Amino acid sequence: MNGETPIPEQSCERRESAESGWGGTQRLSLQPRGSKDPTSFAVCQQRPPTAHPISMPFRTTCFQKLKSVNMSYTAAATSSSNPRLFQDKVALVTASTEGIGFAIARRLAQDGAHVIVSSRKQHNVDRAVAELQKEGLSVTGTVCHVAKAEDRKRLVATAIERYGGIDILVSNAAVNPFFGKLVDVSKEIWDKILDVNLKSTALLMNLVVPEMEKRGGGSVVIVSSIAAYMPFQCLGPYNVSKTALLALTKNFAFELQPMGIRVNCLAPGLIKTNFSSLFWKDKDDEAQMKNILNITRLGEPHECAGIVSFLCSPDASYITGETIVVAGGAPSHL
Image 1 (cartoon, rainbow, N blue to C red):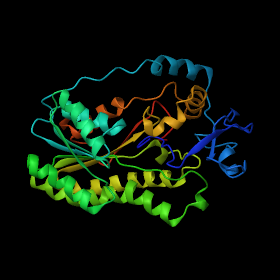
Image 2: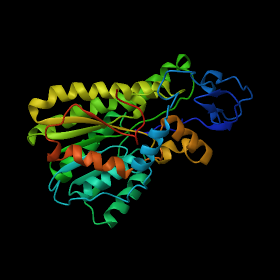
Image 3: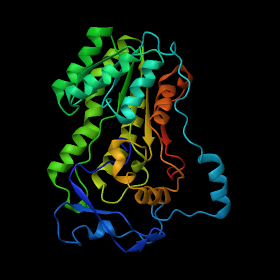
Image 4: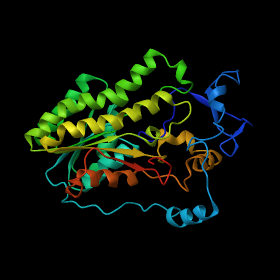
């Protein structure tokens, strides 16, 4: 979940485990490739026996039947776009060359915005821009590693030079270089995760807010994750960073409201992207994750994009400081 539940950046291999919990046999546990110690992630392989919503998806027969009626449909290819909705508006979308970020960039452009896509690698930017321009959309792009100050400045400068300002910011970038016990996280790992997943959003907004103020207001959407509400095992630093984004949203919304700048948050569940593929490429693992999350299917990136478009639109003019969960009914709020 980039949003979504992430693939750990380290190389992993699948191991079988017969430990029970979460209502059945655990099939998916991970450990660094080449490790011979089956207990190296023993804590991660054990499932919580009770209580936590991710560990005990309780379903009654009636609930299953109701949910199958409401949620088992196949996701539509896309929802309707409005090419005049963001006419003459300028949108920055970070980490937007694939997955949820790419779907958001496409939707905002379909709704009439001039969109600047970005990614850490030039060839990914070139590919995304070419694909969207072939669709007749107003899209350009630049390389941006959000943890680097010079890249953030270049991203903002690109929007100002090409289009004269900024109206919309979607902060979507995230990493997860760790899989294991929270007590084993090094300072370097904490720094990397917090630099990219949390601090980069705040520091990018320091640059964007003055430009929005010049235009009389704007809209920001910060992409968090359902992991902010229901922590995933062995992804502790990632969970923490995504939870912190909820507080960042609330605080920025409070401070920026007098300027006419609204700040909201998107918390995707398990969305079918490369970032989350560890959890769905194998059919058995996908079935297990659906059972754990109490959902009937995985989400598609465009199902997040439409929500972002709404949050940036005049229809959401009285919504700020809120987090919208897009997770197919997985437990989140009370």
